[in-house]
Structure formats: structure tokens, C-alpha cells
Image 1 (tube, rainbow, N blue to C red):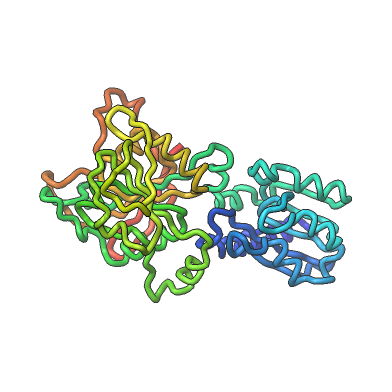
Image 2: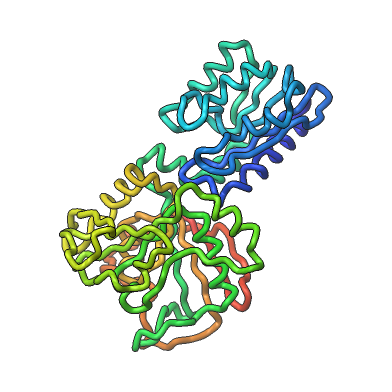
Length: 370
């Protein structure tokens, strides 16, 4: 098997893994391809949902006896622990595979090389790092949570050409096109949780859920397989919310972040008291709790200028997605981000353009921060 074949089969495994991007949370996306000695695919599979069979098990089930002496391509190190399913590394040993080619070692401390050790001790040839970057990109949030105990944070913004988010009177529905608004729901579906602020809930009265149209039926079907529904999180440091807002309907679970218990909220609404950093909720502390207590890999932030500005100014975001509409709202319009005055250019948050695309009449910019 030459390098071209190896890369091709791993690319196939990555494509399989991507089919779980709307449904596996809080687990990673994993794909697996099993190839016999004639370079023929005899089994393949991907992880569909947390609690269900892993990618390797699905591929082994399809391959049956043909897995013996075969080569296995898997995008993430086979697990080595007992959870809701058994260790995939032991299943591969039992199947009698000859070689396992892995894109990424698993950063989860429960695995972290242990799966590779099981395979090697059984005499299986193991190699790692094939298409490593492409496979890791699929699990960017899972990797960040495991390595740094915080989620991967994406801040979403929508603005006019003159970088305004609303008219001076607060009217903002709708600056961007229907196509962009649908795209936002597709983006939300990839995330474990959506975070917003009390200002947005009080002014716009949004649901902040995932609602996909007929055009995205396949994505909707995947999304509704999730073991954990999307979590809606709202920052309400001044306890202004009453629980009667649309945000608190029963279409998805809700978590309120405040510094003191809000007695006006219904008892079934979960509240976390987070210490304040100056006048505001300590966002860094909130992110750590979301990662460790709610297993949030990917956090989608959709809020007003104050909260979005805080994520930018405190360097707490990884990605920014901006939908820019071909309209002007004028200099009296509301600003895109509200931040403290910067005194030196060294303090500026710098980003790199990852992707630019057209969504209806709007431009969608995806920017990365380091």
C-alpha cells in the first residue's frame, strides 16, 4: 500500500467522521475504514451518537471475518476504557487486524496513548499522524476541552457595511438576508451550547434554538439524534430576566449565569452563581465550568455588542463569524462591538481570515484568533 492509497483511505475515514458533526456531542467525530490485502474496502463506519457504537465497531460489524489481517484507518486513537461501550482497541485485537493507521492520538486522559499500547502489545503494526491536521479540525472543540478545560468559542456577529448592528432605536430585525439566517441555524447545530446576554433576550425576545428548514432535512435528522439537546446559556449579571421570555420555553434546556440567585425564575431553571470580574460575570470562570460540568466542546456566542466585545477584548474567542449585509445604517447606528478604549496597537486582537463565502446577498467571513 503506497502513500497515495494511505492518504486516500484516511481522507475517506475523515469524510465518514464528518457525518457525525451534528449528532455526536459531547463525544468526538470519528470515522473508520477497513481495507483488505487487495486494497478493497471491506468495512466502514462512523460514530453516530454519544452512547452508541463507536466508528471502529460499526466498521468491524460490516467487515465481519474480512477484518482478519486487514488494515484499519481511523481518525482518532481507538478507546481503551469501558464507558457506555467497550474498548475499541480490544475489539480490533479480537478481530485479528494486522495494521492500524491513526490520524490523531486521543487527548482524553482516559485514552491518551493507552489504546495504541493495547494494539502494539498485541503485535499490531501501528502508525499515527496521517492527515493529522484535517482530522483534528473535525474535533477542534473536543481537543480544546480535553487539553485546556475550556470550549472552543465562536462569536457570531451580523452587521451592515458600516459595521452597525442596529438602528439607533435598537431595531435590528432583519439586517441580514433569510439565507444568512438559515445558515446561522446550520452553524448552531454544530455546537453544544449557545450563549447570549440578558440584553439580547430582553430586546429581541429570541428562542435561541436550532430550527432547520426543508432544504436542510438531512442535517436536521442528524441533529435530532443527539444524546444531549443544545444548551441555551444566558449571562444575566443583574438578574433582569423573569423566566417569562421566549428563551425559557421548553424547546431546549436553559442555564442562567448570574452572581446571585434570581428568585423570580422558575425552580426548574438551572442557575450558576459565577463570581464577578469588576462589574461583569467572570467569563473565563464560566467557560471552565461549561467545559468541565456540561462537557461543552463548542460554544456559539450570539449576543449584543457588550458581551461580544468582552469576548474579543478578553481574548476568549477562537473563531469569529461575521455576516455582513450590503446596507448602510449610518453613524448613529449601534456599534458592532463595545470595548474599552485601547491605548496601544499591541493590545489589538488580530485575526486571520479562514474563509470567505457568499450567502444570498450577504458576505460571510470566518476569522480565526490565536
